[in-house]
Image: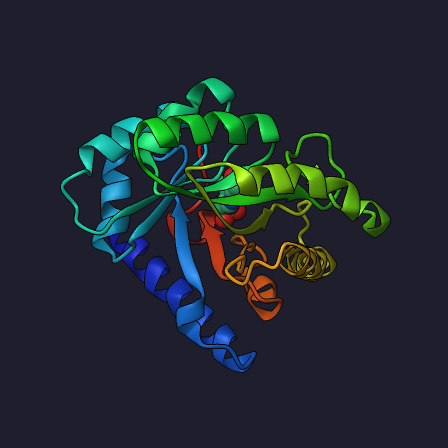
Length: 238
Ligand SMILES: *Cc1c(COP(=O)(O)O)cnc(C)c1O
């Protein structure tokens, strides 16, 4: 079983490399976060043994025991990719190295306060809703004419101490067809460029997009972080 994880991991890394090269990109510009939500600690350990250095989780409570038990592994980075409740902000600042899913000014203010108390800086990506599904978090960017309405929130977040705003993230509506994600990923990229240009932020570059079913399309559209679970770890038990 764990031998499969190694094989799957290496296959995905190989697919990332090939897709990058085929789209004229440097493979080193695309980083892989393996999403281990719902899976037990020994499986996370197997993922790390296979070579993964970036691990992503959806729930703070579920992640903490995994983070504790792997705290002896050098250079391991933990990514929070799920919706964070404001009262969990301090835990995110303390135990995670990246937050992909900053979805409100209210949460940003809490995170900032915690980061300042911890004298740390949390790199964050802002989450945007590209499909309009009510189940998804983040500012709605479907209608381009409305993009400027989001600027005040982003301006306020930029001004907060303790947060390093490094880019944007989205989860498109699920489809069997990876091509269905392409227009959404294009839109997120255009939106990132719009924000970077408006606020003159040359380091606002990260695009966290692409999952098991569509990461190749995401890489073709500029992804810098792909978040992959099932393609490496198999189906999740509910
Ligand atoms: C679960 C999850 C993923 C990984 O999805 P897979 O289909 O297993 O690759 C990526 N991003 C987020 C935010 C997730 O919740």
